[in-house]
Image (cartoon, rainbow, N blue to C red; front, side, top):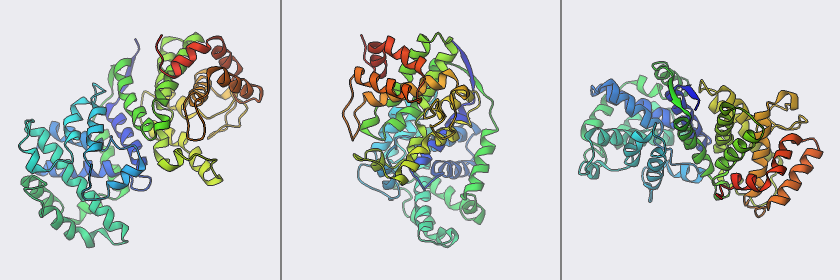
Length: 410
């Protein structure tokens, strides 16, 4: 099994970038929350190790949010069923050995301190969860103030009063005191601006080196990305998993080596991560997209590239994932590459993506049977869109291809 040299912090940062897209316009929320939480923890004299774990959990705290409709509710100070995304996020963290330690904190990042302090949890988990909850609400109050077109410094005292008024009930008193102290300065609020928060996180990224991980560990991490994007719509549930399995199956049929087959599977899992920017109603539109909607939809593969390019060690995976809508005649997007510019792995992912999408039900049509899918693939070969050699592999293994795409066991 291949060993991969990956910087886990870079992967977590990229996952945060992906989660930012769900907000469409309210970006960098996770990074701002991480910054504010870390500043409070530093003021309280927490250890470097606990601050680092807090920072990572804060960046990932909204991993249970895939839908733009749910993200819109995050702008409220409190709402019914706000714990649902906490449950989803915690469950998701538990699927990866590399991230499971964050699950208890994410599970309770909307739990009031009055309830949290009575739970049978390690004190560090309680404090991390409640610190994230507190500064998460600070960020939401900040965004609401900015939405009114006001300078944040004009609203900082009202925000501080709102947090102070919930000390002992919503938030642990020492955490509130720490926030009130660090937020006295103008520099704290200026640091929330995009260019400054990016610099703060970049410094955090520079503090660690890549680590060696095997394919299973890396796949479990990458699967977190794919689950979040596939959860945006019932119509895309398991799409990325299906593309990944079919792409690997076809790669093996094409006699690619083990490392290429592993990387093509990872690229299949990651190919649609840029779709987190797409509003829910557009993904689930039952009719034809208009020109503006087509343009918005077509940028997702480029957004996939922008999210993944920061993870060193996954350069080839990133390239193949971002090329899944290219076509061998150069008519695809976003780069308009032709066959001789596309690796065989990219051409396999293109076919796997089309096959799996046709096999799944969509808002504008039912699932198509294997024979009809093959007919459509052949038509696209004839029109110069898809690689005929790859489609020939599908034809020679049609039943097995269907099972791989739809996760059907023998």
